[in-house]
Amino acid sequence: MIQVTDFINKVDIKDSDNVNCEFEVRKKAMDFYKKYPFYEEDDWEIIKFQNSVDKYNKLKNDKEIEAYKEKSESGYKGAHLLVNKPKGIALTGDILTSITVPYKKITNVEPSLKGGKEIKGGILKGDLEIPHDLQPYFKAFAIVYYWCGNMMPTVGNFRPGRYGGDNWLYKMDIIMDYHKAGSNQNWRDWIKESWGGDLNKFITDYYFEDCFDKYSLIRKNIVSSPNGVNINSLKPSNLDILKENEHKLAKEFLINHVKVIIQRSYRIDNEFHGDWKKEEEDEVKEIFKEIFAKAGFNGGQINKMVSLF
Image (cartoon, rainbow, N blue to C red; front, side, top):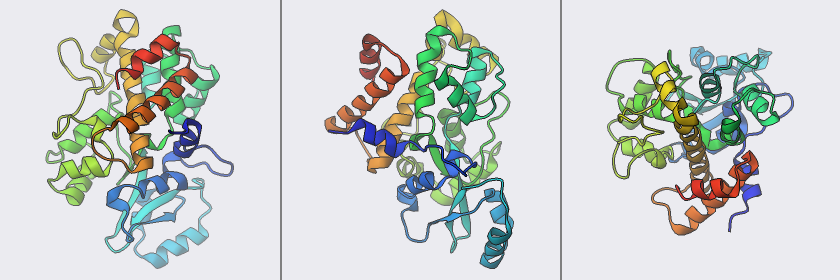
């Protein structure tokens, strides 16, 4: 049976001294990206490059890259890239679902803290204003925020747009509609060039099986509004729906993000694909129980949420 504490320590990308880059580009995160089937081949390697992927792409050859690395006094310490030198491709990392946007929008509070690291810390320390009934939901999200299941290798940073669609569903919408022109065109081009029309392979390669209906490219909902409109951003009309009935759908919105992160972290760490078998499902349920208990849910609430696996 799974040792839950050991698992959590393994998949959590923790903070460390003398490192100030985002968590999703640290060496431990990159080691998890190398577990993705698409990047296991020997021609993909992790390199320390303490600047953005855009800066790397502007350098013309290995000589320029090495010269830059030697001279650079970076303010982005500890950053790495996933690089395929023969193909001339460099990938950075991206957080799958932001905690900053949901906190600001759902609580309607503009905190003095900025960035995911600060918001996560403020939630866990109890320093941020959160409606009482939402506190364990935000705390559960904060606990798993920097797990490997909430990160992915990408060609560049994702622009969430006006209404903060910075979550896995909105990103899947962009990826699945890669034939269309639009925002985040670099993501669309990257998907088309790497996977062509085989988006099922992309879903498997990136451990996104739990985000889609089985054997289809139909995205699962985070939550749906009463009229059936899928909620993938936090525009005002969606926020009104999420806040109704004592934040009923806001709670569902937050806990479903937590479940996806936990499930995906388990898949990545175990390089597990396909349908959940009883053994794997039972292990993930034990992880759910531990995280929900740490977040402050009572036994009845935990059993109800675990039953929705």
